[in-house]
Image (cartoon, rainbow, N blue to C red):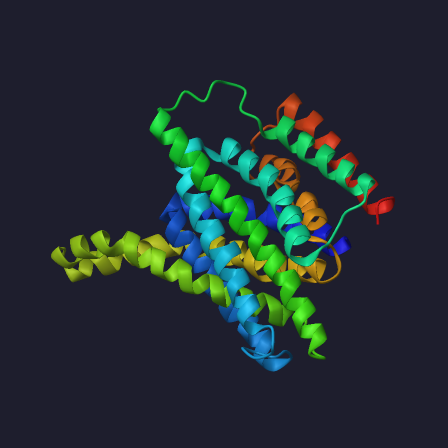
Length: 307
């Protein structure tokens, strides 16, 4: 479970950096480049000390990346502008753990103890208290429907991706292989990169058409100016999230059921609250503080008692 806790801290740092990069270049492009940088960094590990793009579980790890990093993140960035960050995170973080536990139970037969389920429910309740919007959402019905569907799809993609990783580890073990977390992370982000790249091409197609009409020098100067301000945040987002964070998540999934791992990782937005205050000066509310205490207390109980 320590790997899941470390994943939470790394993902929290990634959230702060990702918010900065998304504001500067947009969510779809920021997501693509963070996955690209992570693929390059993890490829160095995988081809130096790991298995590279080989092994019996390769198709499953690739599929895990397509589901979790591809479908999950793409759907999240569709729901984000429609529901806002708090409600989007609330839906995803509270739906992904039970979905993951259910899918793993139906497919792999993994069951959780009553105490583990109770801790998971309390964690999600704390997350809900901390993230629930304090005011009426006040958005058009169509916007709400699309946003809720997108975030629900993101939660399902996250859950299915995690279960696929669990299945991949089981398959590798049955074949006498033991892929390390770096190799598993590389194979997973490689799968996610494929879908993230296709989505970026679709989104950017109209932008490319406009740029072809503009003077080449102006396009180059604008691109250089943009990347001077954003590259630092993109690299940090990738390092904390899709590189180190994904590796720790894969290490956690190797030994711990999906429902428990995702329940612990669901506290990521709460761990990000003090980081956001320290880095961006965003003051936490009393409700977020109370919800954070509830969730963190349940995580401590789960780690110390519910193993």
